[in-house]
Image (cartoon, rainbow, N blue to C red; front, side, top):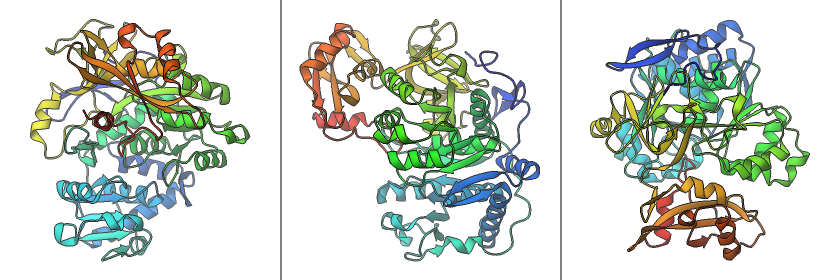
Length: 538
C-alpha cells in the first residue's frame, strides 16, 4: 500500500519518481528536492535572508542563523573536526542545539543528539558506540559525563553555560570568521545518528541520512499544508526524531520559524510561549493534549493561531480529542505514525478526513509503502491484522555497527516495525499494539490500544495502560493500570461497570492497579510496560 495519489495534493516536492538508493532499494522519491540539508538552508538564505528562522532566548533570521552555523563550523574545523566526525549534542531544546546540528552538516560530520536524562553509564555507552570526538553539553549535565580517561577519543568538550572540568565555553565557537562553503556531501550520507530507546536491549543507533530527513520534512509540509508563514513550537526533545525532524527541520524546510521550548514540558510555560509567539503548528504526545485540556488557564490564553496539533504513535483517545475540541475548536488534531527508523512519519492523517477516522493513524505518506504480513511473512487482505512493514526514502539504511539487527529488521527494502496493525480498502492504517504487547486471552487477541482508548473515556481517568498477566488456564489475563485525574477518587467497581458497557467480555480488565504517580515513561516519552510488569513481580 502506497500513499501516492490518495488525499495528498501536489506542491512542495513535485511529482514522485522511482529511484534506487542504499545499494539497490527501489523507492518513490520527490523529483524536486534539495540534495542535502546544507542545500536547503542555502536556498532559504538566498531567497529570504531576513525571515525569522529560530527563537529560543534570542532570535535568529535565516541570515543570522547561517552566520552562526558557519562560524561554529569554522572553529571546529580549526580543531581538526571534519567529514565523518561524530559530534555529540547533550542539550535540551536550546538554540545552540540547532546551530551545532547545522554546523555538523556544514562540515560533513555526523550529529549525534543524546537525551539529557541519560544515566552516566548509558551516556558512556552511546558516546563510545558512535565514536564521538566532540561533545556539546550544558552545565547541569556535567555530573553524568564520563571521565576523560574512559573515552580517550572524545577530545573536545564545549559547554553552553559554563566551563566545568576540562570543558571549553561554547561561545568560543562563535568568534572569528565564518567558514566559506560546505564540505561535499551526498544525499545518502549519514547526517544524524539517533539512538532508539532500548526498551528490549541495548540502544541501536539509527543512521538518518540527508535523503531521509528531507523526504520526511517534505512529507509533513506537503500533507499538512505548511508554508513559510507557519511557526512551529518544538516542545518535545530535539534529541527525539519527532522534535528534530517532524517539527524543527520540517518547519525550516518550508522557510518557517522554529520556536523552541527549552526545558521539560510544563503546561503554563507551553501555553505562554505558544500564545506569545503565535504558534500555528506543533506535535505533542496524547497525554500532553489531555493535560492542556484540563488546564484552568487555557480559557484565558489566546491560542487562536494554533491550527495544527499533530500527535504520534497509537491513536489519541477519542475522549481527549473531544475535550480539546471543546476548548480549541479551530485546532485540527492530526495523527502521524512513525519511528526513529522511519525518520518520523510513515503515515499522516489527511486534513480533510481526520474527524471521520479518529481510530486511524492516517494513510501512508506520499512516498511511503506499507504492507501488512502474517507470521510467515505473507501479505494479508485489507482489514486483516498483521505486522506492519514500511518502505520508502524516509526509512533509514540501517543501524550503526549492528549487522545482526540490520539483517533481522530490514528485509527486501522494508523495515519490520514490530507493530500489529491493518490497512483498510481506503488506505487507512490502524495500529493495534506492539507485537510483543498483544494479549492472548484464551485464544482471543486483545489489543491494548483498544482497551486503553475505551477506558480513557471515564471521567476519573487521566491516563491508563493495559498489559497481559500470565494465567495457567487462559494464557493471559487483562490488567489495567490507571492514573486518576487530579483530586478525583477512582472506584474500581465503577471502572468495571464502565468497561462492561463498552468492551467484549474477553477484552475487559480483570484486575486494576491504581497509581498515585504518572505512568512510567522512557526518555522518549513511551510508556514503559516492562516497568509496569515489574510492579506486579512479572
